[in-house]
Length: 379
Image (tube, rainbow, N blue to C red; front, side):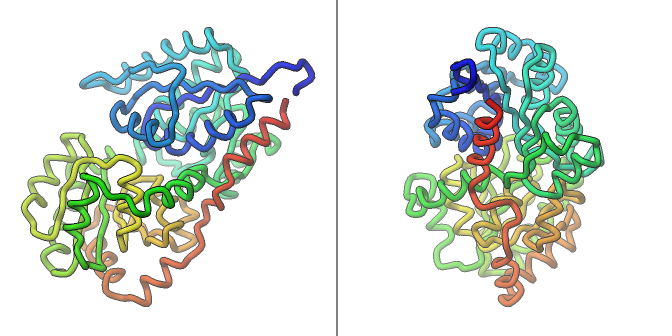
């Protein structure tokens, strides 16, 4: 127990599916130590349906559900609503520490709201930077603002810590932990290894005996418009040039993604377009893939632990460790580069095996334990 024999109050706030996945190991870690911590979870439901799927999978029941998602919601209204709504939660629970994750609007607005009330802010996945405020948008500015507010910074890598040191963050307030997404992944991949349901069955039938499965995800705002036109043109070319390749694309619900994807790729025999997948089905599908094309940040961290080379459809990445380690390759939205790198990894087995066996720079699955132990030591 702490000196005053009171449990330390921990509040974890998140709103999107990626946040929920990466915070789940922390929720479990703090709740396991009930003698030390009074732990509660608040969700903003910035992404309602996709968030709920992850909560169900990890068995997380929120103590506060703000249910803020609205049709046609913009960043201005979302930010102000989160600030006002979390104020009421903070005043009710009176946490000692607020935990936020990464670079979402939920994280930044919640951190600012907590700062106004004098609550200590802990930033998980701290220190990622592109130093280009429009790439990714609005995530780069979100994480920089959260980094200025935070009292404790849990950096996934040494490079992330170095970014924070360059911004004059006190080294004593930074801990390199690895990324909690690896904790979640290593637990989950075993649970879904033999997953068979109405979602996975048709995908399995589509894959058949193919050893050249390409998984695609894409949703970034900066790729809307011309970027997605080029991405889809590249995928169409690959599908028509490689008869034995099977491309599977769970299509994001944003109409600016749906429209070009369906216009270019619907009806192509060896391309399967699906609805967005729940977390367990997606982890299962990652394991079936040979390579992954994505503009997602989290997949850049997860896929190397599964031995899956990643082509990142962005011009910059806040995860340069993966580029340096060789586990990911930046291809942007350049049609020719996407085609060239994808076909090379599909057809050059030596290159594929070399890339697939490289060490994942994002940790060993023990990040949550390191974070919990740090807070325990601060009591």
